[in-house]
Structure formats: C-alpha cells, structure tokens
Length: 218
Image 1 (cartoon, helix red, strand yellow):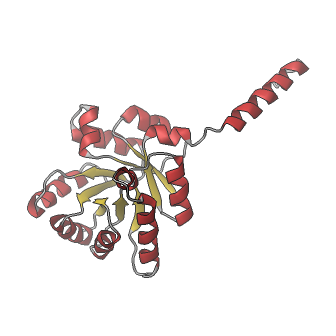
Image 2: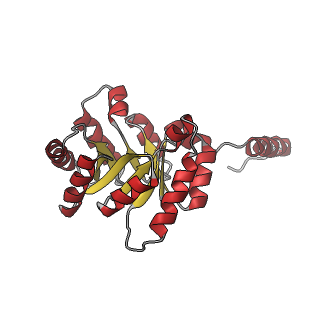
Image 3: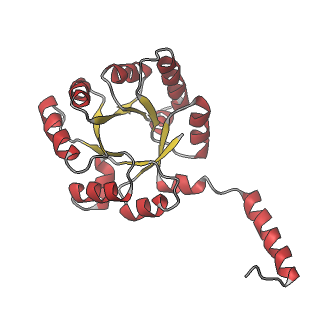
C-alpha cells in the first residue's frame, strides 16, 4: 500500500519525506488556502521534495476551464497529478487529459458507480471519501470494499483506489485489508501509526536495564 500525505504544509511534507515512508502528496483548494501562499509556488516546492505523484486540484467547474487549468498545472512539474471533481464535466476532462498523457485523480467519490465511471474515463486514481460518509451515518469502508470488488472483476481497469478522508489508524487498517492501492492521510494520522503503548513500555524497560549495566556502545 502506498502512503500519500494530505496537506499543503511544505514543512510537514519535507519532514515526512525524510522518513522514506512517503510515496506522494495530495492537496485540495482548502489545504492550499490554509497554506496562505500562491498555489503554483506550493505545488512546485512539493514536487521538488518528493518525486512521487502530487495531486493539484482545478477550481474550474466547466470542461473548458478544467482543461485550461489542468494544462497549467501539468506544466509545473512532471509528477503533478491533475485532480478533477467527479462531475460530468470532470469525467469528460479526465478522459481527454488521460488521452494527452496526464495523470488524473478523480476526487469527491461517494458511490461505487461513480468509481466505475471514473475508471471508464481512464482515471489514474479514484478518491473515495471514507470519513465524510461516516459523518452522515454511512459506512465509508463499505464503499472501499464495493469499489475493490468491482475493479477486481475487470482486469482491464487500471485505476488505483486512493482512500481519502482517512480519520484514524483503524480506517487505514481496514483499507489495507481490503487491498486499497493508496491511502492519503493527514500528517497527524501518519505520525500516530507508529505509536503503541507497549512499544513505549518495552523501550523504557530496555533503557532502564541498559542503564544498570553502566556500559556505553561507543
């Protein structure tokens, strides 16, 4: 499973990239707004930090506008993935951009049939939103299961499932067990994955015993 970080905070991305565990980055207009810097500058800097896919989202809602913005975003760096909304115009733009050699992430997916349409449009990634479905009383993980089942039934589908709106480690565990190709996680969730109270307890015990020996490795 590939790990993407969902943020436009360059310092967080740089820190996580240094761990060697980061495979890519996703951004959206809300995350860009929080960064309070020009979008082009942010995306260009992120693309320099990581060679992996970096999703940059269009803001146009019409096909022509999406095509123009997508072309602009692709010129920033070769690893830019154009992020398009799951609308009729977005799917049309997806099909044309993919035919032109672009990588495309179709976002805001909330149903399995939407995911099937994105695959038919040739999307590189489909982003189903788990947490937002949970928020309204639906089972976001069930959506991942449905998409994986449908995609698995058709070997010609190459679209990767990019689990989004991941709120906690259990979401990630469930997605991994279902075989989701990618999960995009907020920095805090990524950092929480390494934590376990028994790891901390064991390490404290080892250090206490080592101290008693009076030795030094160096």
